Image (cartoon, rainbow, N blue to C red):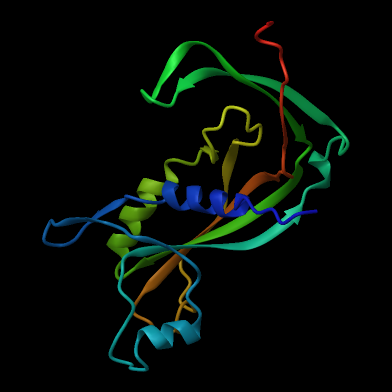
Length: 216
């Protein structure tokens, strides 16, 4: 089999980061700013590098850190692995010179999609806050979205039958003082645990339909 990579897990993670993006917080002076979102948990070694090995420098807050904690095969959602779904796709003719679509039929294709494999992806979102008010502002804006789940779409391709899924909020850890740099850190972190039922799809087979269009 030839090398194939479509970044499917990466797309789910990126969409999760977009869900948690653009939440504002207001400081004591009334200034509003958006909370940045980054990927990856902050280990003690990385935190020490960011602090430049100094006890007088702390990572900036507020911010949200998203990272994958697990990927499990869901056997309960496995269907017929030999199933192949065929779809006939007909495009509108495209004029290369004008860059516009014409009013007649163009190329025809047959797309054969193989049965995808179901997995359960688990993610954590660490909410960094320098005080309790910041944490309350961020949590109140995020928690109201999950009742108990939120729909997520990873693709706008209309033949992608795995594009839509849901994000489930599993648990809320109010305070975790052991992350990122020990119990003496001034940054308080609340951790949200999410689970996303996903599908990982094999490559599709695209065939060009040889339909007779002109008879000479």
